[in-house]
Image (cartoon, rainbow, N blue to C red; front, side, top):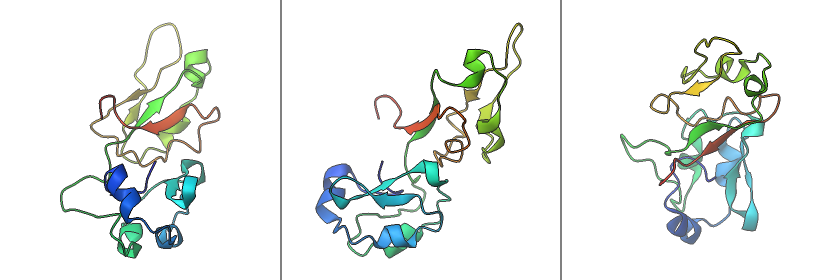
Length: 144
């Protein structure tokens, strides 16, 4: 996954010089050099605050913030390793979701299961690192 406001993959690869300025600028230290030295995100290190420091640091303009355009369309996805899906009470991902996009509606006969409001989810990744089973990922929506 590329940093927020990255151009489409082909154009991003063409423009990115792999200077690591975006990586150095990231205050939450979630950007790192990935395959080929291109910046990627590791949400195990924290969350994206969408501060835009990476965009400001990007001189070749491989990251380009456009007014009223979201950072990306990626959203949280909760996999089958989720503890409540195994019958174990856990709500950690919801506790770390500032957007309150992860909710746990009560259900009869078992643990409340997490549901993601994809309209509210920013894809910030705050829910990933605290998950004890690493069941949460950030992905492009289907068809996107």
